[in-house]
View 1 (cartoon, rainbow, N blue to C red):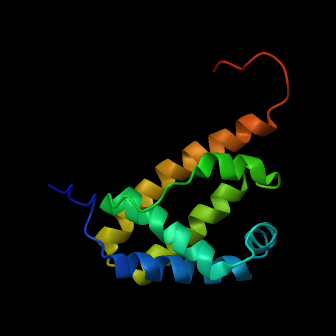
View 2 (tube, rainbow, N blue to C red):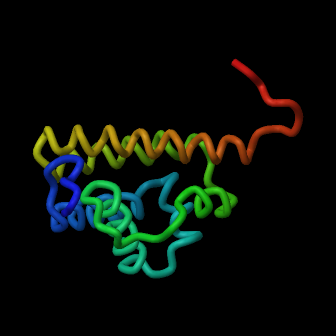
Length: 133
């Protein structure tokens, strides 16, 4: 028995979103240099990220990485990068997908992005007692 997808999207649509998004990332004045520092093989990176999304959306068990560890270990990923990343990703989703699918995927990306941003913020927080808000 398979788990139904979170929302209707095909593997081919996932591949297209990933390809269009990373083409835009490479041209982006802030994100482009950060990604260029870490991605040596773009087709391999895109395949890995497409596998991440297939796992997150379609529940295909084709991704085995740890995005939090990767983003924290990069060293040059800053919390403010996630705002640019999400804006570019949202624009890509709206460009490539039907509106309802784009909105559903955007909501998932924003939840994931918020978690990654918090992990990176923790890494760059000044030492001392935690700030309880």
